[in-house]
Image (tube, rainbow, N blue to C red; front, top):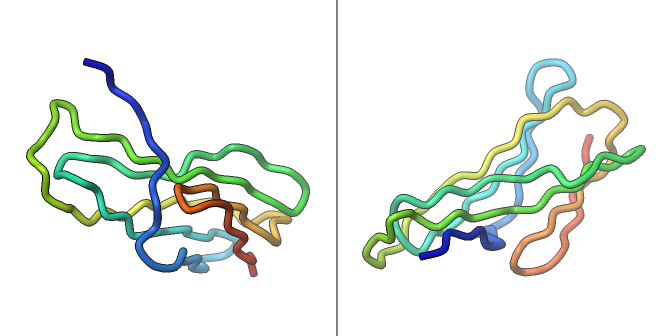
Length: 99
């Protein structure tokens, strides 16, 4: 039995919240196919003005009975010089401005 990651898809819009100082929180709601799954943002790259992420879903291990389960994927980061986030998920590529 193999264990693998899949691209997740956000259920609704991505949210970016300013926190104290230069900190920001990126989050998305993900509907997992079963309980026991995990969802998170994997940081792919940081380039001048941009941070690039992939939204991952890790299926439950051992496998669980079918039944949708809502999850929150969250990523905290320092804004720095970032003006844009690029997010890859199962629906494609999305841009999100950082203020």
